[in-house]
Length: 413
Image 1 (cartoon, helix red, strand yellow):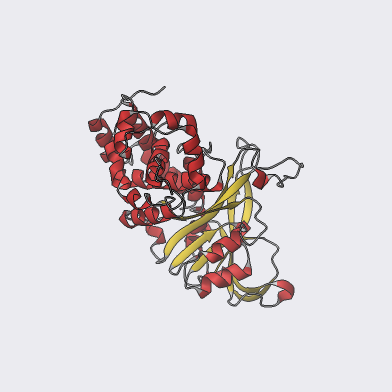
Image 2 (tube, helix red, strand yellow):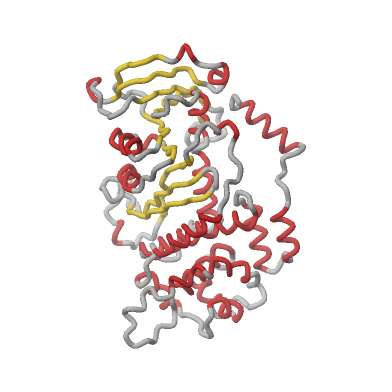
């Protein structure tokens, strides 16, 4: 059983709790007897607190924390909540209201420093990908799913748009894991949520000519890895115009083509194909030496140097690091609800936690900052020590700087 002493630092959550006030009336329409004690703003606050505390990784521990006097004061109530009330809550509340909170916090985020080599890309660089959130095997909605071995596969897919400059997820959408219906297919989900003025950096799973046309038609650009065997009709060869920087970056071919079945123009615009030679880790065993592989990258940008397009695609890996931080540190490896609404609430609160870490520290959220916040909440670190950590300059000198320089040199930059 938790006691009141370890739970501290709740005042630092007040910044976002004020935004949760708009959630209070959600789900109260069905409360004809006016005896509801758990409201959406209180439930969201408990889930957000769970993201910052390693002692609150299960629904039972969240329920125990709701009995603490300091948590009750934070929630503005004198009551604690039962596990049945916490379990039933996701069926009542609308998780999409948390998207408004994410949008409000997103306005406060400022660019954390853009790679100067990407200065020619004026659009907002947006990395797009999806990740699997594993669920419990009793979930009836996912009983039909089977992997290649015939085993049941349970879970949902979280479709994410991630802004590179602000290092924040700005759009999330939860669907089933099938990826074979208009509601869950990656390309269809992205096509329905496109915005003007962005440069979408996407992986091979999003390769679809209709998606490329939709991105261009809405006023954005794309950088996408495609299959090597796509049918194409050559329009222009730019390989002989490659700069020394492009060759050092591994670019071996740069052409403009019409792409599609039977050499016919299947897209509404010419596509630029850039072939980049890169070292790729072997699947299944990261200890083996990397293999050299040629990556084929498609884009509609004809004016950007080939090495910049290659660099943009390298940065796509940033969203994979975000997913790792999201799952392993913010508690989303373990789902506290088996209801799709509850999973969405947990995911949105985890994104809000990432934004708070960025706003507090003014830098990318990392395991060190998350660990220090945990120590502060647990009572092991003082407020002065937390502030010292948050204001500490990045380790860009000495050994760290030499390692970074060697890495850029190894990557060809």
